Length: 142
Image (tube, rainbow, N blue to C red):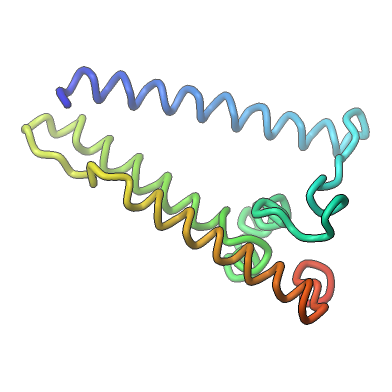
């Protein structure tokens, strides 16, 4: 991929990411102010199991307060997502800045695939503990 195409893709992905972050922060602020209702997880209500995103908000706030281990217990998607995003930002940004023909990032989406595998394994283990052993990871343990 040439430098201009990579730069355009990089800016586009960061623009969409910035919009998503602004929407998320706006929803959190509106929920805290009581303007927008906090909606429960539909998967938890219907099937009595956690979705892969359950605990994500608590994990995000724990991470903001510097509690990395607690954030990992709530939902590792937040911490691992930050690592994958940081990897992308640094390696692609460095490739664009250096402009020496070298690529400093993994062309394949291996980090993303590993991220998805870890999140699915965590979700399955958490739901098996809830359904089989009756241990509510977010309620009982934390």
